[in-house]
Image (cartoon, rainbow over all chains, first blue to last red; front, side, top):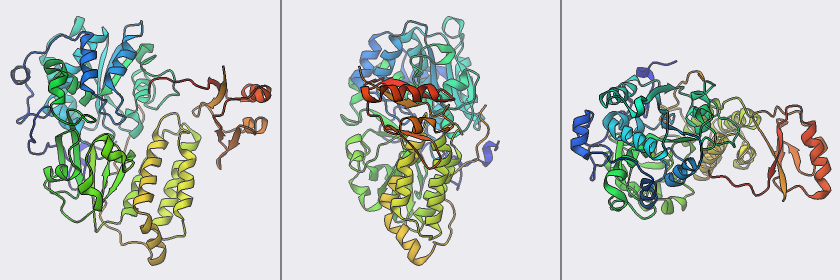
Length: 431
Length: 72
């Protein structure tokens, strides 16, 4: 396993673990960081006790999960609340998305807000065990969280939050994979149903969500849905954490009101350092926005859906003009192929075949966009989890936006290799 | 109550027997794994589908309610 120092989190130029300059407003990422519990209580005020009414408030706030899938949080809470057995609560801070750093930044900058959210959900659901899963390559994150937990005293009914460092494989953060690992297995997805809300950790109904979701819950419980919606848009209420990376002056994590324009987000990161060829929105399961469209895009579901995109895990990666997009796409595709769990045939054989075809396109061999697209459609919907679908989405978007590059490579030969832009970290085992 | 077939892609190792027994709904991809047509199984195909399910050596072929909808 690679040491934390050698693992580029968000940019080969240097790991991005710092938050950007404070944006207006500041909800989740106060400046300076609020890490001590008394300071946290000073800053945010006392935390109310979680009751069933919080679910209605969360619904009114329109909170959606912040791990990428964007599932309505209130619906998930109700699904777990409706089960009869004592549930388990899991906060997912594994952040296996190579270009993303927002969860690591949040857990270090405002750990108590996340812990508040976990306590609230545990109270609302009458949960027993609670877990917080972090990236094992970042001991600083685990330390910050454990320090915060120990500061808060004994815990509910004498049960302490369990901070665990999950495997760093890309699909290990998928909810059924994380549950399987917490149950003592490998961090690989399982065949669903049963889904974690039905039968999860120790066979119990399990509420599992991204750590940012919990932090937002900590705010909504204190200040209410109307306050939450005072920022953002109807379709993208509140604020959201974004990791801005690639060809920008100051790569890092920022908090932006929902529905912010893409241009304003790039400006918050100091602006692009070169002409913008395209922007990858949503991480490695995401979608490319062509450079010419950057000024027309807002980071809300409506605007993004016009480009077949969604905000996903909140990664915004700028591809500059001078970089060959095919080389970047093929590198990421090869990495995604390497991250399959080796369980489902179409994923095991199909993803490397897609990566092969993209590499052939990079070297200018006669590969048509249609051929690659045919392979991609062959893997969609055929895995136990959505890993093949996510890669399909990324590759289809790449073929759409960089179509003419495939043709150009065949006519003029491959581009000169450049320094890699998008990170493809080494990963360890499944335990 | 209409039913369809689904495959558990984790337990499936691509024997391909299902595609032999139920070509009306199941074809094989280039790597030998089944691609299943989600169209409900008609009464005419019911017996063939049952044979395909029973013949799977890894018990990977499963019946599902055609309109089954679960959150997420």
